Length: 99
Image 1 (cartoon, rainbow, N blue to C red):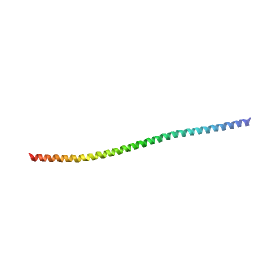
Image 2 (cartoon, rainbow, N blue to C red; image 1 turned 90 degrees about the vertical axis):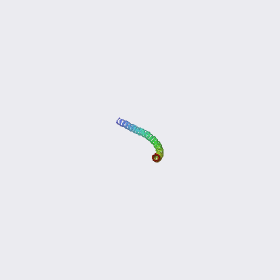
Image 3 (cartoon, helix red, strand yellow; image 1 turned 180 degrees about the vertical axis):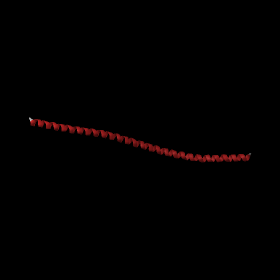
Image 4 (tube, rainbow, N blue to C red; image 1 turned 60 degrees about the vertical axis):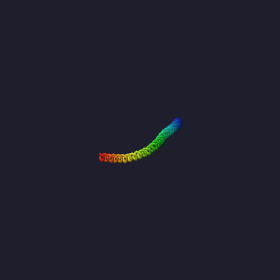
């Protein structure tokens, strides 16, 4: 009887070890699936950020062009204002000489 109990205990231990291995394997596979899911989410987020950065860089280029155009107009306005002020001064001088 003792050999039969020993044999049964051995079988139970072997079965328990197989269950532990199976449980460990399942836990590891579940962890792999979760990490792969997280990886795919992170990759998708990276792609979205890349697209946003490209769009912002295009906006930046458009803004730089707009700023440059406005600065050129601003500079021309300064010159035109100076010319108008000089023309007014000259007209005032003529007015005083006519009196």
